[in-house]
Length: 449
Image (cartoon, rainbow, N blue to C red; front, side):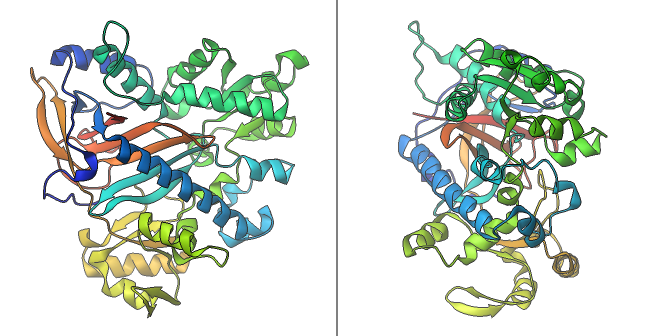
């Protein structure tokens, strides 16, 4: 989401790197085979080995992610005492006023079951740009598939690898075992989504269901019209818990009916993360957290200042900046090069304006529109630091090395570390990184050495 710093690889990434463990064509074939039938787009540049970082860096990433996630959840819930009041406070679109559970305690208990923040390594270390809080977040299947390839290629005769990483599917299975035990229900998991959103094949969802079924859980993928079979059946055949692997906007965009989901919720199927996740997912929550909440301790404020870039909900008011009070709108207009403008519920880099990439007139127009809507934030621009990686270009017989500025996505399932998804431009250029955005967008996973 920013121009990379060209000073060379940042120390946070460490010095130890993993070299390619097979010929280029073997690696290319295995990577593409693992993600076949999942709707994953063509990529001009594929990774030749996992991105490796020191144990201290890996631990810091998840420690900061867990600490900020707790504060994000508390901030979202304390904006108002009820769901209806939160919907009003966040000015949520009408499409988000649905799929809440009848029991508000259960609803508020499980919104953060599946989380992936977006993190860049700034000059001073990790900076958390946003929190994706949704059972449908990307990176899970992709990280699982990349890890499958790297483990096959790098394992010795005893099956040991020179790196470590949690398995996303294994951690999510453990999350569901714990959830079933906590709820006192059978460990039968419904994975709810639709292949009509990502492509014609069901493999994207069935990969995870197959993994669960082979590791002691009973699981099944449900398209929306199949959902009555999860609850309208004999008790021993019901699926009392599940993964909400879809977003409301995605389903509405392709004309899918949400009624079967509401019927399943009303008949005792608990799908995580619950709809309250929409408040945590909103970037407005980061603005509120960055500005500080009355209940925060001095230690919590210091923690937020360390890992969260200066972020503010964009309205016509005063705020504090660099130890002084400022009028927010004039400050934003006058400091285009230092700021990024983001819509509260923007996805995949949409509704994002980098001040330094537009002229002053365009910036002022975007700011004026955002103020009228009242659901946007401004955030300090962070110059992402680089690491050196080995990539395979299309048709190349050998990997080549390039410095890239990755966006890191530490996966947290039920609060447990579940691997790190990484996105970057394989041609070394800069911009808003969305793997589905261009052929030069690439992905990999990060491991610890």
